[in-house]
Amino acid sequence: MADPWLHPHTAYVHVPFCAHHCGYCDFAVSTGQDHLIELYLDALGVELAGLGEPAAVETRFVGGGTPTHLSAGQLARLLALLNRWLPAPAGSEFSIEVNPDSFTAEKAATLAAGGVTRVSLGVQSFRPGSLAALDRRHTPEQVPRAVELVRRFGMALSLDLIFAAPGSTPADWAADLDAALALGPDHVSTYGLTYETGTPLWKARRRGAVPAVSEDAELAMYEHAIGRLAAAGFEHYEVSNFARPGFRCRHNERYWANEAYHGFGTGAARYVNGRRELNVRDTALYVRRVLAGESPTFQSEALAPRDRAFETLATQLRRADGVGRARFREQTGFDLNELVGARVQALVAEGLLADGAAVTLTRRGFCVADGIVEDLMKENVGAADRRD
Image (cartoon, rainbow, N blue to C red; front, side):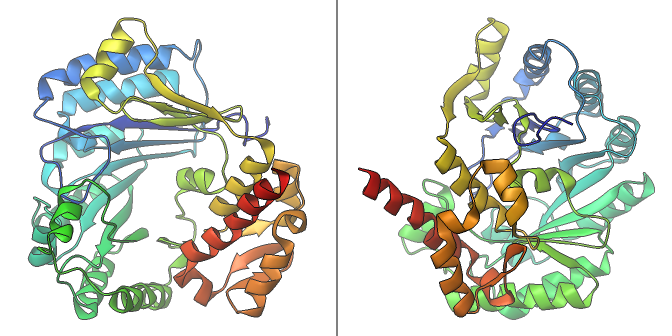
């Protein structure tokens, strides 16, 4: 097998269309542009054909936007394109993001017939107040119906949840987790709300119109999730992700290993042969460029070996498996001690990291993972300063 950090064994496909742009979202989404859907599928077909020949992959992920905003017929067309250009062997993982309010029995049947094995359901919260604060349009009552459809057609179920919504409390979050577990998911993703610069929610917070949750309350919510999901039999395998045994998201594990991946569609990123590229975020521009025979890429970068090594460290450390020393050297060409040995030992002494064949986060470390990564990344900045 070719080195997976150079040659992709996974692929992401972006579907930007949404009925509504939620106030916290800064993804590449398109509302009020449904007239472009068929042309967008034409353009996706052209971009995929740029592979030259079908590229076999082990995992596929269709995200958005809202992929199930497409009609059943449009979904069937999309899946046919992916099965043609991105074939996958038996036993592979094929995930798609689904919103509760746009999921029907016809669409569920279409997904299953097209080979989808895993649904990531955008629940976010079971509380009407939190859904309103997040500017979500579905209702809590629509979630069990969507779950039933996923199960009826034999697909694995992941629930996406957001904690620390404006005005929410630790008790609210505990109730959300209980409601999610009552649905019997295979996988749960828990994300602390991020106020992304420029979004309506970020602007509302700056105006003082949003009652943001305190850092202490947010930390309490995260710690409760770790304990509650562990007690329910879930493995905490990445900072924000929990799975029953055998149900990790294999696609996302490729990202966290900093391995290569294909990316297609509006705003999609790809990482192939050490080069990162990003497509334009405007759907009309993407369609226009691709159908005119032009590249949709607007940003391209190949990191220097040392920078790529630090990037690998930053992504792999988010996993419960951590940064395996032997694998890290094979993947990057650098010894971990050479890069961050002293800082790792200092963080071990603080009880934030554990060290052995792999460097891993402790329970306390998971709670401040972003800070730990930032701390370690400073070693690269410092080295650059010394080289100058």
